[in-house]
Length: 326
Ligand code: CP
Image 1 (cartoon, rainbow, N blue to C red):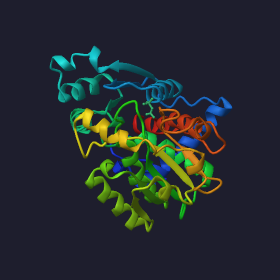
Image 2: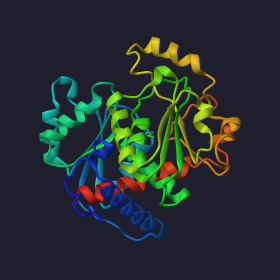
Image 3: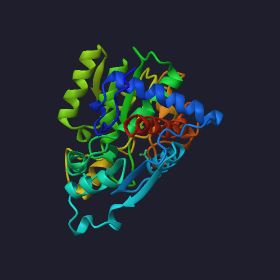
């Protein structure tokens, strides 16, 4: 167990070593147990977390705000449009000033080509931890909750378990690529064989692919890319199918939508789930386009773990806050 996470940022999934992630999981399960038993766990009494949002949220806002309160602290919800950021407050100002007011700065900024840079610049100027509530490249807290959920359902030893991270069609908007990128980086470290399935226009960032392959080599796991949802689902233990935009192919939203609309058959339904193992779990970070991205039958069916997955956001985030903001 690693005990030296105080003051650390969590921006990219590999910022914490495997052992440090294991520590986070241990603490998360302890906090989950304490909450279930109603045992006090106010490890961050009088600490305040800034929660700066450049993009909407249901789960991330709710779980960070509830989590810091349950740890005895307070979360300040700040929407970027209500600040002076558009009138000149730079990343340096935000890091320097919020770093003096708060004990941690959590930021969601998913704008393509901008978000991750913003977080890193704030972190450079901040004296307190910067926590990534999702940027254009990574969604590390979602991924920690996903890993926790997979271990709860499939056991702590995930060697030779197959996860398919699949693109799925959505009609609502071009979603960030951060969730699949985080998954392919983190899961090989815990022994999972990763299959990434997507149509050709929905590639992930080349540098992330290289890092994911490097992790797979280091931990001796499989890493494969296929262009068929059906092929990806075959014999999977974990089906993680969600939409993301063709951001590496085009920056034009109209062109992106035209490309996306070619692949409306990429829906997770009972027929495709039948290709996976019988006890395969279905995962999605939510929100999902119901009956477009995934059928109600799968989402609300016996293999779905989406609500446990959403709950684990709370416990995983509390663990990281308790370890980094002490
Ligand atoms: N999964 C997730 O990050 O949900 P929100 O966008 O609602 O925060």
